[in-house]
Amino acid sequence: MDNSEKYHFNDFTQSHYIEILKLAKQNYLFANYENFKEKEAFLIWRHDVDFSMEYAIELAKIENDLNIKSTYFLHIHSEFYNLLEYRSKKQIKQLINLGHDIGVHFDTHYYNIRSKDEIEKHLSYEKNLFIRFFEKVPVAFSFHNTNEFIISCQDEYYAELKNTYAKVFQSEIGYCSDSNGYWRFDRLYDVIKSKKYKKLQVLTHPEWWQEEVRSPKERVLNILEQRKAFTNTFYDNLMIEMGRENIK
Image (cartoon, rainbow, N blue to C red; front, side, top):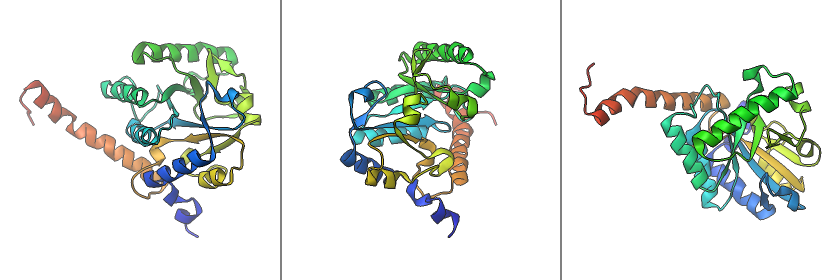
């Protein structure tokens, strides 16, 4: 068995993503971080956007076409995209206009956080940035790159934002994740088909769901190539837009 079969590379295409969502609609009632407590059985779908706003938009459009609402957690400190770029701001507005919620993908490592008080302080700062720049109050937050300390932070709210790693999500609700580009626990299609969990939180990362079958590393390299193509044409497009000479 090669890695492609062992790690289900074929699962991580946008066409298969559509299949999974259609199956999820048949087997579950979709909920969000604001209303899940009202339901006896549900599925919450979230995205941690680590690498690519472009692929986030592609999945958001697919979900919108299927009348599905999910939550996109955006990372202020990502090394792969800049939330404060003008085009990122337009993409965030597009996510919201497609009917999705946004949340803070919070990186405790950036601040070297070691206490809950520090979480409150820095998360409140990032929440206020979202409100100021994107004119939208985030509904929740998700931790980036969890460790033992982060997993122990199980309060329902920090900085008045719902914690996706709260005790209720760790002890009472099933979980399925594609972190690092493969299924960390169970294969998502199998979980949804079998209805293994009455209550389920799904975590996907948009960068893993691409047009072609690729390994996780190849998917990241593809995103970097797309970013490179954008930067290579940036100067040329800028000169055209400003009506200036393109001096080489």
